[in-house]
Length: 93
Image (cartoon, rainbow, N blue to C red; front, side):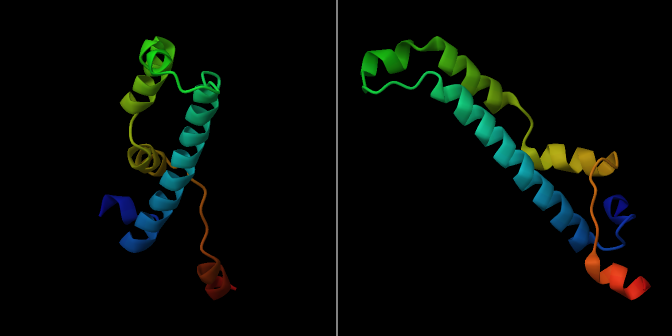
């Protein structure tokens, strides 16, 4: 219930955190894809796949990162997420 003090609605809080988690996930996926494309080859040589230690290190790094939902929840708790509810804004006017 501590999470929904700002919004006064647990469902709205979950929706905000969920949307931010999706944004974080997309950013992380794009970063990983860019870094792994550097190692991409036009030929599928099985030996090259197993010998590419740098690519494995990068993948392991991203696997160890906290999940996007945890990052988004922490950002929400710290007040780092900007959100607004257009319906509430209309009610206040």
